[in-house]
Amino acid sequence: MAATLQFDLVSPERRLASVQATEVQIPGAAGDMTAMQGHAPTITTLRPGILRAVSAEGTKAYVVTGGFAEISATGVSVLAERAVPLDEMDAKLMDQLVADASAASSVGVDKDTAEKAMSDLQAMKAAAGF
Image (cartoon, rainbow, N blue to C red; front, side):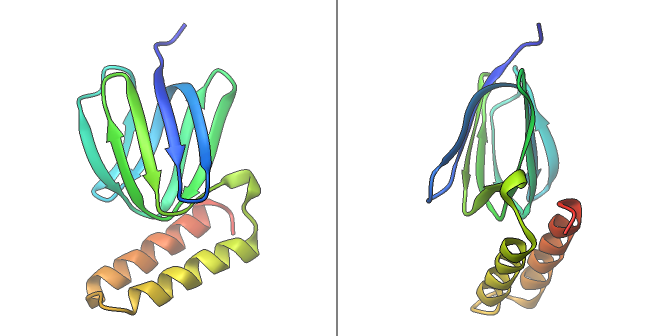
């Protein structure tokens, strides 16, 4: 049996996951990373993307729009700005996430940061199949 770590995913709306996972694939702001048991302690910000947790029940994917991940040797805790299970996502909700991010990025954010955020959202939309 593969070694596991505790994975918790929460957003302001609800707790989305609390499972023993063999790996968690995280869309970090500095690049994608995979956390497994024994990982070095790390804190990273999230970029918009697809977060995946692999457990005994299979792989569960979540759309996240940003937030933070705290990784330790025994667990991963993700505090997401917005998170939705990929299997609950539809085109209307995806378009709303993009519109919300577009509106937020036009207020007090430099042009490069806003363009990067929109690029990440478009890549997330494509990865999710929308």
